[in-house]
Amino acid sequence: MARALITGITGQDGLYLAELLLGKGYEVYGLIRGQNNPKREMVEATVPGVKLLTGDLTDFSSLVRALNVAQPDEVYNLGAISFVAYSWENASVTSDVTGKGVLNILEAVRLYAGDDVEKVRFYQASSSEMFGKVQEVPQRESTLLWPRSPYGVAKVFGHYMTINYRESYGMHASSGILFNHESPRRGFEFVTRKVTAAVARIKLGLQEDVTLGNLDAKRDWGFAGDYVEAMWRMLQQDRADDYVVATGETHSIGELLDIAFTHVGIEDWAPYVKQDPRFMRPAEVDLLIGDPTKAHEKLGWERKVDFPGLVTMMVENDLREQADLAGK
Ligand code: NAP
Ligand code: G4F
Image (tube, rainbow, N blue to C red; front, side, top):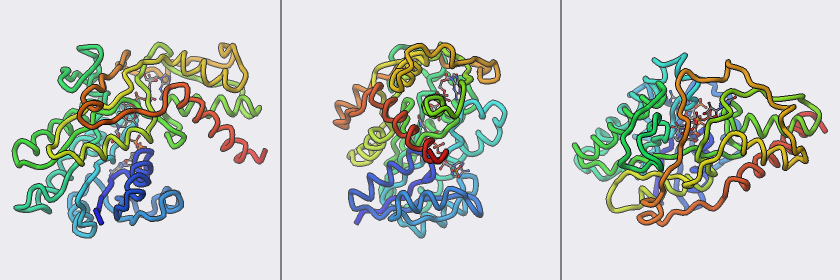
């Protein structure tokens, strides 16, 4: 039975990846941080087969201990401070976790594997946020990186460190440059979930409007359940490599609002949407669109859920969830 260790098990991708690996018969370990993490119960209820180990990406010895217990064939490093807006106000801790945390786990894996350098296959959760002030449209694996946020800068460090461990030590270390991916498990701080939860609450009469930041931003949005499949496929290749995972389409916040509001029968969303500079960023990534050709050709990966399907899936989930919460 193959064994895997996932950091970031309490997050959106950690849960989908754990479900995928459990379904394939893996023994799955998840790293959970903090002395009484409030998400522990949710993880135990959602993916009951996962064995939880305590540890933190900033604590090297906790990673070594987790590796010794889990004895994994595959390590998926999904743990990070992942909210871009937060990273300006918390740049130092973002660098420690999202950047240096990658070095910590790479080094822990290298020491754990010893002479048998390919004993463990490693996945790093890199991000389209690394493209920042985009130098090419669409963005591909070779596009020059120009991050625009402390989060993006930390991800660039982790990305190049992963490549460096592959080239220096021969580690089977791959980096997935994933474009935005969303789901009913997305955190409420991200714009898609903020919108779908608000639309559901407006429809149910629980909220009057929603306040957003930059409505001109465009993203290449896919479904998280599709994207974890690409992570797993990367680690099944004979050679480690880097891959862009994206839909190849870009959509604006306006299109997101159109689909979400229309789905609950509201054609004109303007009266329900306010703007506040509070949600604007000091520097913005305006146009993200990925070229997933390499992932299609080498991994045989294809997305299954399109943008309208994703948004309506999230609105439907939030209608149920918000009605339950309100006792309706
Ligand atoms: P997420 O829902 O925000 O989950 C982040 C995870 O990291 C959580 O489990 C969190 O644990 C954990 N974490 C935070 N600080 C940690 C620390 N010091 N040590 C260990 N774990 C820590 O993120 P996601 O959407 O699932 O994304 C997974 C990964 O892919 C992240 O690295 C993210 O940056 C990257 N990524 C995401 C996207 C996207 O669109 N979703 C796109 C490209 C790349 P707690 O719950 O305890 O805070
Ligand atoms: O949903 P977002 O916060 O996602 P963002 O910044 O693109 O980051 C996500 O995707 C990255 C991949 O490129 C990941 F690496 C990262 O970990 C994370 O998962 O914001 C999307 C866009 C931005 O342009 C933002 O300015 O939406 C715009 N936006 C407009 N109003 C808003 C809001 N974003 C948020 N969070 N909240 C708003 O009210």
